[in-house]
Length: 311
Length: 260
Image (cartoon, one colour):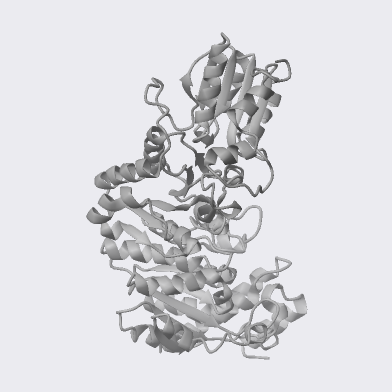
């Protein structure tokens, strides 16, 4: 995803001479080579100084530039939280804060590198948009979309090597709208980010038992497509949310809120990261599993796999 | 004699701030008095098409009264400060005429100024970005990030004026942080050009800006007195955020009129 981001940023910068990327000693290395070669003045490394990264981005954008801040997600938003709140959100300045390694992507590096509550924290800020693409193709669209916004945004990316999931999807990426990757009748799976891979595996299992599933990329978490979610709750008897984010304040919580407001009568189940710092290491999938987010665990709870509640 | 004219303006600002303070339970009076001559000198004697960021946002009344005197803010705007019918608050808000950044939390102005100065340099805009910080503000880590970064980015179109009054909200800065001063060596070691000025003397401030070599970012240590102009407010922490009583108000006006 970070290479898709870097490639897209290069395309945007070729068209717009006022596009900048400001990094805090972390760079989408390989993908940025072309950008740095052609636009050396517009790639700024502030060093290990995230507060200055965000403040400077605000200043550049206040001079009419289109600006991306970039570093590991936890460092991008937690260390300079007040700069994001005051300099970007309070002043409503169009800067995209790119967090690489959203969720538990840095699965061998421990809790300091896990952005597991980032969507909740960023969504709480007035004026902020929150976008979390599920694969490299959505990353391209999301990067373009963020570059067009009139206010601040948080672009939550995975890391590198995520599979392409949306190559055959007909529905286009539209900022602020749900995107149906596939349509079914019995179950609707709402998800976002790289864990969409699990959502798709589950959809396949559902199809194996003769039912059909919708799979929806909720790539824009703020402004959330509330009408879209209300409609998904209305048109499917069963809706499940799968997210690589704490159960506090993520898509699961937001969907429950909408279900209550809409008096939804579908069955709603949510699968999120635990509200815990877990000391687990391994692959990203190992960490999902440690949080109870393996395909098997979810299927069991959905009573689809053998050994489930009704299985 | 710019100095006498400036002096008279600054007496007027002080009286205006005291007048406004009478409508409110509390106001940052002393922090504004500390930097009035600096703000006035920058607007009247130094800046043309330049940018000014009041990074010590709690000095807002200094900027508001200067902007009022320049006709950029209307009298009625200041009359309604902190009122439901007004739009001026206790700290500067981006979007208000003459205000180029929202401040209020310390340590934000300088990094923002770096971004502006960088854009101005790259796009060859003929202007300088001026930032007014308080000395106490320099306890914020973000300031030192930016202090290190500005020379690295060769931002010779950036001027910081430090309102150096050795006070913070609760105490003297030098008491809270005995190693805070001297500031001179620290600033020079970070790669800035440095000057000093009498922060209550318009001519001194103007001359210190003029001396700028123009090769490095520039920082002026402007020595000031917190609460300057009203003797009982000077160097007294309680006036950081307080409005004078009716009697204190009358006493302060007399002193400013030179009849006390």
